[in-house]
Image (cartoon, rainbow, N blue to C red; front, side):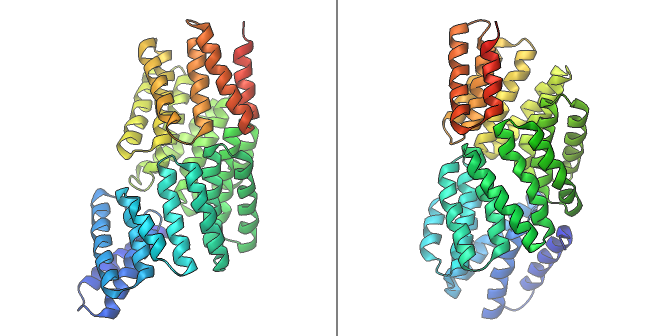
Length: 395
C-alpha cells in the first residue's frame, strides 16, 4: 500500500514487543528477520536516535545469526554492516557465505550501493549485473526491477555509460507495465538522469513530468528529490526559471520534514537550487545554499556530490567577484571528480573551470574546455558537447 510511515511504526513496535518476550530460538530467528526487514524499508530512520538504535539492533542481529548458524541471515546482516560502517571487507565475507540466489542477490545489491556511494560506479555495475541475474534466477521480478533502476540505470548514467543507462530505463518501463506496481511506475521518472547527462533538456522534462506525480502520491522520496532536481535543472536550462523554482522549492520543503530519510538525495537538489539563485541574481543566497550542500556532502562522504557542490560554490563565488576563491573551488571539484568514476560530472567541472579561465588565461581555458568536449563526445553527451563548442566558438 506504500503507507511507509505506518509500516515503519509497526516494525519498530514489533521489535519492542520481541524484546519483552522470553528468549527462545524461534523468537531469536523472528528478531533477526524483523531487524533485516526494518533496514530494508525506505526511510526506516528519520532521526539520529533511530539510526543509533538501528545500528545497535543490527549488531545484536549479527550475534544472534551467528548463534543460530544461519548463513543466509548472517550474510545479509554483514552486508548491512558494511553499508553502515563503510567496511568493504564485510561484503567479501557475505558473498562467500551466501548460498541461496536471493541471499546472494541481496548481498550484491547492498554491495553495489556501497560502491556507488563511494563514486566507484564502474565497479558497482559489476555487482548490479550480478544482482539482476540472481533475482531473475530466483523469479523475483519486483526486486529485479529495483536493481535495474537503482543500480543499472543510476550507476551507468553516473559512469557516463549513457546508452546502457537508457537501456536499463526502457527495461524498467517494461517491467513497471508488466507488474502494474505504483512504485515501479514512479521510478520511470528516473530515466531523466541519463537525459541530464546527455544534455537533452526537453527529454528530461518529458519523462519527469510523466511519472513524478506518482512519486508524490506514494511518497517515493528518492524519485521526488532526485527527479525534482533534474527537472529543475532542465527548466533552468530551458529558461523556465519560475517552473524551476516551483518544483525545487516544493521538493525541498517536503524533504525538510524527512531529514535522515532524504539526506543523500537532498544534496543534488540543493546544488540545483543554488544555480537557480544565481540565475535570479541572488548571489548571496546562492553562496549560502551551495555551502550548505557542500557541508552535507562532506559530512556524509558523498564523493560525486562533493565535486558537484564545489563546482556550484565556484560558480557562486565567480558571480560574487571572488575570483581567487572561485578558482580554488573549481579546482577542488576537479580533484574530487578525477578521483572517482563519473565522466559526466568531471566534464562539467572542466567546462566550468575552462569557461572561468578564458578571460585571464585563454590558452588554459581553451585546453580545459576542449578536454571537456572530448569527454562529452566520448560518452555521447551531445547537448553538453554543443555547449562546450559554443564556448570555444565565442570571439
